Image (cartoon, rainbow, N blue to C red; front, side, top):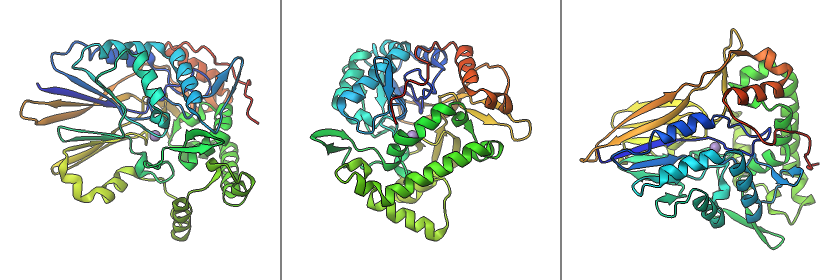
Length: 388
Ligand SMILES: [Mn+2]
């Protein structure tokens, strides 16, 4: 065999606090260990939202906050907190990367936009002791395999590729997509109040069973959207993070006229955008949507291998919360550059849990889930938040 390509995404490594949704360190470490010592080279593609900078607080002493203006120093401090909470994951990447023929690709997603900072890339290279064969691109394209996180086909989360940074008060800060600023200033506070709920899919079913929360979220989101149109651009005139992009306004208006508020289907959007180029590759892999998708057509296929964070699918009849399996794409490339690929999955053993019990005490079940998977959280104490 010439090469093996492994793709997984949306791991969302956080700081071990209430907004950190990754607890499957043991499963991930065991899996990456199994890739070490192959006879052939392995390209390990971490397809975006791997380090969850977006939901990670800035921890300063015994206080923490979710700052809106992310300078290089803040991204580095967040990386440090993530490293402290999940250092064994970095260690196993170090072991995997020791062999020169093994390559690691950190593809940039919307939760790890911070990877645009060169100093953050440098620090990751230092932490996993790999200076060659480690990359931070927006996409991967080798052996007719195309890999990309996919947020560029989701208009709410797409980033301005030409302008990853903006200037604010003489400092370079991250030019997050508009929605991410909303996440930082509003949604994370709600996430701390309902840390488990956000892990359960599908959302419409969750909301059906949990009407108070949906009301809180809708009114919060509506208020934020209205203020973003009418008030913030004036109130924070000099602050680029409060400017709503023009294409967002246009899209908003278009959707309003069409009455179309459906969640984006990134595979569909990609096909529409890249129709002519689809024949160039045989396999397209995306992440971002936290779903499992296999679409096979003559000559090409699109796959999404779901998320690695702790996430559940609610059974609509019994309301049992069924933990998602951990999935990855395995591609084998032979010496004639022909590929064979498969969606693989790893099951995690967990006790059965039901929606109604979880909703009575979300934090208790957050802790139980972490315990069951052997994740020792260092700072799982809420209410030190300094955000207003
Ligand atoms: Mn994403």
